[in-house]
Amino acid sequence: MISNAARRYAKALLQSAIEQDVLDDVEKDMRFILNTVDDSKELNVFLKSPIIGKEDKQQVLSKIFDEHISNETKSLLKLLSEKNREDILGDICNGFIDLYNQHKGIIQVEVTTAYQLNDSQHKKLQKALVSSTGKKVQMTVNVDEDIMGGIIVRIDDTVIDGSVKYKIRKLKNQFAVGTAV
Image (spheres, rainbow, N blue to C red):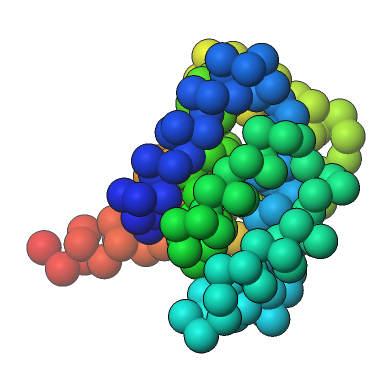
């Protein structure tokens, strides 16, 4: 859950990036920062620590990110340090990426299959999802042999379960209800 403060920073950054015509650069920056923060427990603890002063946090953020990010994103990091809001940096990145995807008409789709898809199957599935949703699709494919076969597609809060495991469970329930009557 993204806090209201993080959402406001993300929205302001999106608007500023659009106005400055650096939207794609800032999106790459946000993904880079998010991956860096997520991959480093120490950095995460450091940013959330109330004991460490804002100047120290600003110096560390500058050393880690300045060579790799745009000026627009550098301004955000500086502002966060000035306001002592480094603790919500990860949430701001997540919020920005969500807003960016909405702005660009991109949806995140999580697909679960019983086996690894080959390139042709992956492309066909991607094309079918684009066709059925009318949006650009960023697809994550997971393999779970427990579903036995078929496919499970999750788009936001909607789950389409076409797995063999689900169909067997559904049949069992139908037979159980049929014999109990």
